[in-house]
Image (tube, rainbow, N blue to C red):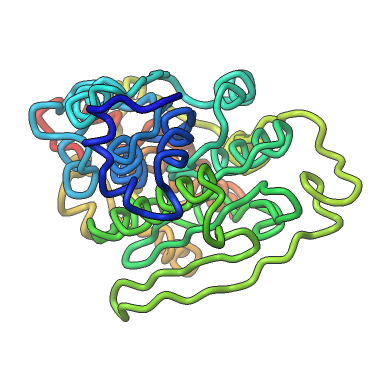
Length: 370
C-alpha cells in the first residue's frame, strides 16, 4: 500500500527513522489491530495507533461514556457522556486521522463472537478490566495463532507484556488460575491514578507498532511492571509453561469455554433485582453494603449498613441471624462474594444484581453514579 504525498508529509518523522522509513509506514498502513475496550488503556492506545498511521483499528466495547470515565479515559470528552464509547471513540479518531478505517463492535466480547471478531485482525490489544475477558482474549488469540498485547492497571501501578507470540508464553502461563471471586477489586472499587492507564496504554501501543514493523525487542517472555509512586519500571521473566493447557507442548484447550463460569462469576448464589428490593423493604431485611467507606460516602441506599468485604469474615458475629441479608456493592461482584461467605456461615442472604449502580439507574435516578 503505497503512500500518497499527503501521507508522506503527515508521517515525515516516521520516514526519517531508519527502522521505519517508507516501507515501515506502508506496513503500518496495511496493519489491522483490534482494541478490546475503549476505556483507560484503550484510549491512549487508540490515539497513538491512529496517529501512527495504522490502517485499520477495530474497537469492541459495549459501554457508554460516564462522567467518572473522564478522569483517565482521554479518548472521550464531556459532550460524549451517555454516548456509546465506540461512537465517541470513532468521532475523535476520525478527526485525528481521517485516513483511518474503523470497525466498531458495540457489544461485549464473548466466547461466541471472539473468534470472528479477533480473527479479522493481525493482533489484539487487550484493554479489558476483568478476568473473564482477559482469559477469553488470551485463549482466542492462541487458538487463532496470533499475538496480543496484555495490559492491566491497579491504583498506582500497571503491567504490560506480549502474549501468544511464537515460542512465547501466554496469560495462562502467568496466571494459571483466576483469583477467587471478589478478591481483587477493579478500578471502580480500588481507584486508579488517572495517568497510569495513559502510561500503560501507550506502552501497549508501542509494543503493537514494534510487532507490526518487526523491530526492537518486543515484551515476549517479559512482564514490564510500572510503579508510578516510586517512578520505577521493573522486568520479570515469564517462561512458557510446557504443561499450559493453551500454549503448552500438548495443549488441551481446543475451543473457547464459559469464562464467567471459569472465573467463578456464574457460581454466584441467590440474587435479588433492584425492583424486587425496592418492593420488599422491611424490618427483617438488612441491606448490607460491602463497598469501601469512600464509596459509601459517595452514594448509598437509605437504611443500609456499611461493612466492607475485607472486614466481613472477622465481623460475622455483629450480624443478625434472624431475617434476611441483601448484600450490595458497586456492580454486583463483591456482593456475590459476600453472599457466598454469608451462606457458608449459615445466614440467609441474597446479592443485589447490578449493585448500587443499577439502583441509581432504575430506582433512585437522582443518586450519583460513579
